[in-house]
Length: 326
Length: 289
Image 1 (cartoon, each protein chain N blue to C red):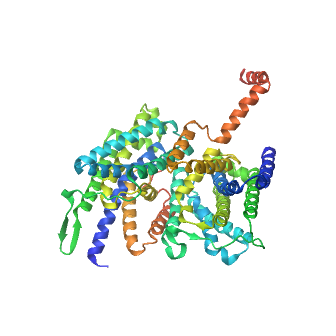
Image 2 (tube, chains in turn brown, purple):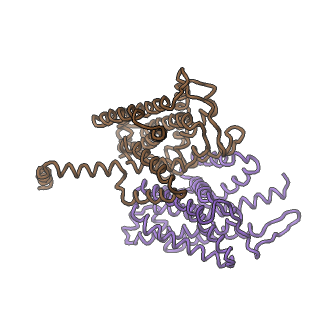
């Protein structure tokens, strides 16, 4: 926990100081990365801490975004919209999770996928409400009591949102509930034997993750000023899952790093070639085959090797010998 | 709605159900035996349809094009299994990421090679007529697809219950470790099962191209519907895939008439109700993980 809090302080400084050094393009990119990071961290929560692999997580993100596009301008205040968007997405996650969480593994994946596709189909087909496949512009302007005029102000809203969720995840994963969730993933039957209601703990994690994804969706609608059904599509869920995995499953910062890596890579490659999906796909496959479980794990492995070399290796060897000798 | 339109839609629904059955059967066996949700399964379907389109463009006879396209897709699937998938067995995240990566790559590659606009595959001339019964018109190609679907179902039943390989696969769905403990080389069976499933998807793609059209995006569309089919029908048996596919095929085509904007909602609600009543699907067994 100490290390995570230290990491939080570093992130805090980086996020707050970024606009002082960055140009307009970089700031725009950073906003996208931070929004995606919130979304991907929420998926990382259920994948890494509860062992639920979902391919319908974009549904909650999309619900948050469409909420702003459909009703945001009637509500006005940004905090209220954020709170309501988060609550609605969380409620949806709670209901759908309650129905599906009993199904494990691949089955859960298939069910969440089709749940997301159902919402996608609704947004796609209800042309007179959602604008169909063309999407709809967002009329709501971010309003914190005063109208946000500059991009930097919206950046700070997003940045503080990201930091708040990151801090929340640190606290949650170290709380008794968070530890119980992790315990359920590692050994569900033992946790049940210990008297934990494993389904309830999974549902807590799923609801939190849904709400968090909705929060990211609300911010995205303000940031992008335009929503389309693609935000609900399972391909977007799949991208988020890729970001979790390339960042490192089961770590707090991994999904955020994965999001940054993905957005930067996509921006870079798509500026060179129209065929960027092929190159991205090849990179993902290479990461699966040689990536050792994501960037964070790779870095940890390298630094521990390095530390081993720098530090007195012989002491470790002696300890190793003691442990293995009969 | 009059009777002839209803009959035509019913026939369309059955034909579509059979196409879904052929895809879902392979997907179901692959998941049941290898414990892989193969997100690239719709890709096999799409590639086969495009292969049939190109073969038709080269004036290859339809009856020759079927085996050629199937063999091509099966070779491709064996390469995928041997070179990529076999390294990530037992790792759920990696499998999902790998098959998802393949899906993205080939979806884009198809746009690159054949362009983004939809193509149409002609119905083979030998089947391009209708049988008229009173006021009802039955297009023969639809009937042919239904017949092939039933034939595949019968073949799968025979294969599953009456052959040695079928017994191995049934045993593997129940308890994979025990099968390998009995001295059966699971690796070869894995490759065989994967290629067999891909071959079925390819058959569906070739036959379906003439009904559904050939277009980018057909891979994910069919993949999602066949996943729903498996969830509804239950895993690891052809019975589940067959009943689920008929149900989804009919719901999809009928839903398009009555609630064109909400057919997916209808299918999803149906899936939810079935899951609540029977969490393993209509005919599902508990699959070993």
